[in-house]
Length: 525
Image (cartoon, rainbow, N blue to C red):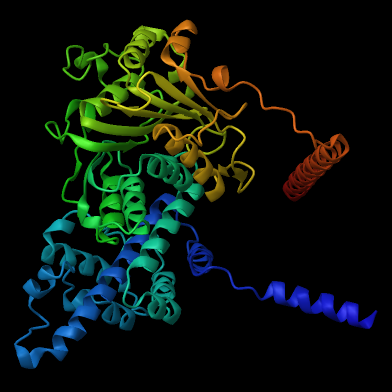
């Protein structure tokens, strides 16, 4: 018995000592220093410092190399040396070691703002991009100094030496955590990573031009770069074109791409947005990846009634969904492909001529695949969503559409948010690739996927809801009713416990309020 207890205690201790990933440790520590600052504001403070750390790491590595080569004529203070190696030049007052030495100074906020100004002055591609928010009165200098120490800790420095991968990963992780912290507002700049991974894995942008006309913080581009690297491709074979109407979000995007070494020259910002002021009007691309605003009613459609982009019908002024679809198609090269997120209503709506536009897209063979997504994937909306895949000049499967119903995929990461697993993403992408490549291995799966001729879609009035076509899943022979009943019962009991706990908390707070009111009345008397 003693041995068993000893073994269990040892296992429990081992479980307790398992270290969290570095990015999670950093997030928890950084979030503790936030104090009275709103997450939307604090985001720029933290991400700006991570970016500063990244460019300092890259600069210092090349600086050391050039210093060692001074006998051969190298000059470590020559900006052109860094430009030739695609490394940002960091002036003396902005170097990380200098800022660390000033971290305890009450004027550290001003020093960092000055550092950001100096970096922009020396690197034209960062002009107007970096945050200068560090000398604000609500940012405690002591906490800021602690944040510098945290981001510059020895663990992070040692791991990221020789590579920007870790700092890029930390930057991306923090973007997601800030989006969660901001909730609905955060979703406007951040598309959940699992959704981006699914789009990229299905489209496979190995080389060519990639466009996102509503690019947010640049997740589509970052994931495309990852995809190419993971498949032993050359990142130089991809060029990106983006546009964003929110300047603050555009700045995040530029930093996110710079920390990855991705050329963001063609990522543009203007207040009018892609419809009114298309920054890439004459550009045709191989891939479009996008997550436009759902059901946007304020897209200035009344000013664009005769626009050349509306080849398949004029979209209604009260909803931009089919304006976005045609904007994407307009920018596709003759054999280009697009994958994008839309509100699920786009699959069935007939309002304002949307049904006619959808019919024209289907009859012209543009719609290749539709994926029904699970609920709770997006931070900024509870509107059901889907993925559209559009291809110009299809050769294979020209008269068919693949429908995938993925509503039951994914798992909850908290009570409000779901994400797709790597297995979910691989399964959905593989089904699409087998179907697209006309592999004999592709088969319809009841309740999950079906390849449907356009003639059948026409019979169902051009509705594109996957559930209409994939049918119901076949009953499993080994279905255990008792197990399922017990699982549902346990889930219900857990929900009742949580409800009871919340009710108890509410009653305690009400009682506390009443006690306070009574005490205040007694004091008045």
